[in-house]
Image (cartoon, rainbow, N blue to C red; front, side):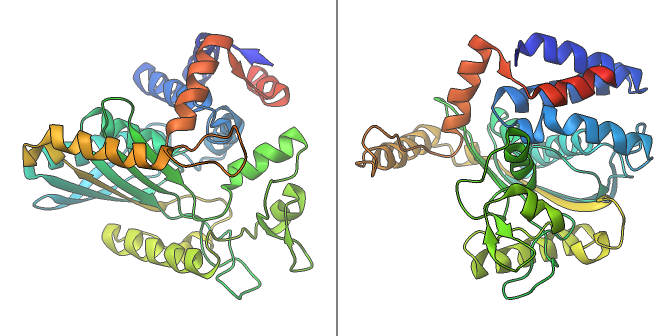
Length: 332
């Protein structure tokens, strides 16, 4: 079913106010969930709302808590999320990393004890809108086997890089698994198979069946052994920089919570050659676009380009929403 963005935002705002969020936080949450859905990332937008409310009911997410600074080292800071809502904490820490970058040229905030930030690209866009480059990542519960292993011991640790651009920001937002688990669930809700292998089934065979992969959450790392190594490194960095929980510690909890994240922002305007930077970006994009596609009629995209096109379509036609998910939200 298609629903107007205005209606989604209105319903979500009413929902979050009902669950005792302040009006300011309810507006932020409603905006982030809606914007992700408009951009075509329902898996980390509206589809996550029922689970978000469930975690509030279980006390996993503390409604009134938010991130606080616990240590400062010049342009590097450590913060504690106090198990507050991941969106609220991530927005606050991105804002702080931007402030540090504009003061020092580069700033970093390492955050511990927070919850799922939903769509990581949200904070990449936040940084780009402030004319900052960003490098952001988070660890997660174990949902991929280390390469060659049977059981999940590493996380799909989402990784974000954003670059400000006049004609539309560059935003890379990817899990270290071939498919984010929210995206796998998205295919499950649609009754579809994945277009490529996304994880292992019970027989230790690679599969594109969402149900078989989700049964034990054994995702496939991007680049096989390379993705496995990258996941381990990101977990190490997030853990040591924040002095927070590793994927190992997170695995001891029944529900994924108290995770660790890193927010790095760079202010490229310190070089005083903004025109040159934009020219170089366009050179790379033009060179990438100017290639013959394998399938005639296909297009080649830079990171973030397709979501911009999806956004334009959804703003015009309304957002495609799963009826079952919408029904759960209305019931809540």
